[in-house]
Length: 181
Image (cartoon, one colour):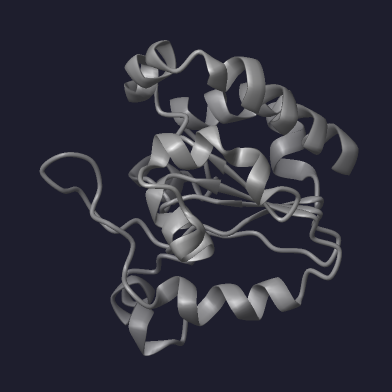
């Protein structure tokens, strides 16, 4: 909170929203907390989070209470509303904080990369031409990374157009979570 980059949030009394522990085996990297998450101080505290937990095959309690799952959004603060969706995470934020936190998690097995921002940062030039193709080729990034589409209910159409996701990717996600909890 003392970082000048976060001064406006600190002045408003808004704490950063992330979770990292030495016991973490899985890290979930998404875009940034939403408004509801920041207000409640619970990451993924919305319909997207409900769907993510369903995809992972775990309860809400396990998701929040275990130290085996870390939550490292690309920005630890809600960036605000844009014309469509939220404002992107701030440039330079993940570059500054993720390496420091990842060093503190020696047993980390897999980083789940949700959406374009996380995939671009972690996979860089290794990504495919778009998010769909990156997720479709998920096996080439395992075990270090598992790229996923955002679990937003707004992605219902994407899910219908890409039935392979539920058939191929979600069982791999569930097995990975089961193995590490």
